[in-house]
Length: 169
Image 1 (cartoon, rainbow, N blue to C red):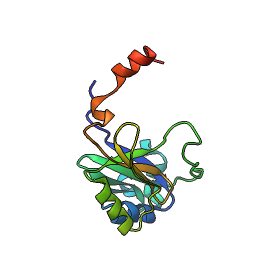
Image 2 (image 1 turned 90 degrees about the horizontal axis):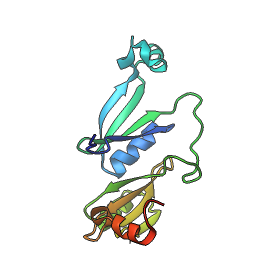
Image 3 (image 1 turned 180 degrees about the vertical axis):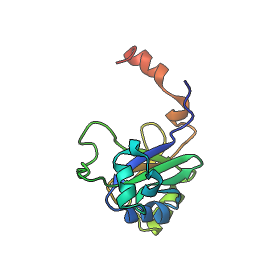
Image 4 (image 1 turned 30 degrees about the horizontal axis):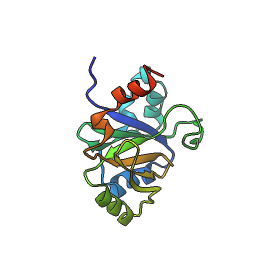
């Protein structure tokens, strides 16, 4: 099996309008799909969504915001009974995502001009790739990155690591 790319990342939010404003107006991305509960009318296999089609047909089930052709962030409204977000890196599972740019310094300037707080300024990380950290209104932290000619994501380091530390640690 060969995977081509990551198609989407999904987040639940209790502030859909604020999240849309951030991703669309501050990051410059665009919503491509808005799916409303009415699309699930009569589809009993979809459980709660089919029920919402009866009680809130115009409500938003999810929104796909396009990052690059065929690559999306998917936003769901908070589901009933969902717990609040746990601070990043305090639990196993999801950590963060990264968005790639051609010019990290120009991206930083655009973000600052749009009122986005920079959590960690642009710097070259241990993988020899430019990185900068920001967060969305729900606190989801993510990187903005720019490859360099020496980026390990291109070159890799498995052979060097194996020579130094042996097979899988």
